[in-house]
Length: 73
Image 1 (cartoon, rainbow, N blue to C red):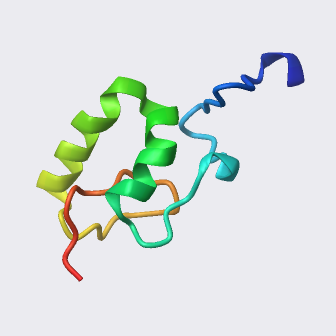
Image 2 (cartoon, rainbow, N blue to C red):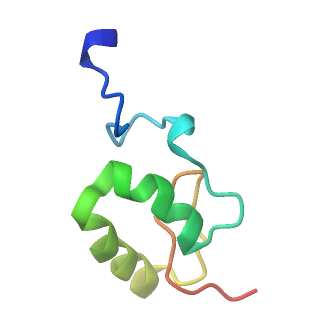
């Protein structure tokens, strides 16, 4: 697979969780943007808007899920 892996900038195929692309420990937008742009490119902001409308408390999450824009503590 080495010849088919992008090196710089590093990108990923969404169903494969590449932890080297970044993870979210607290579920913040800033953490999610690190890997979100690599997976979703220009669609990331739109997906954040949907996540914020549908799951503002970030109940459905994993280490690389789309974060909501604001999060209650």
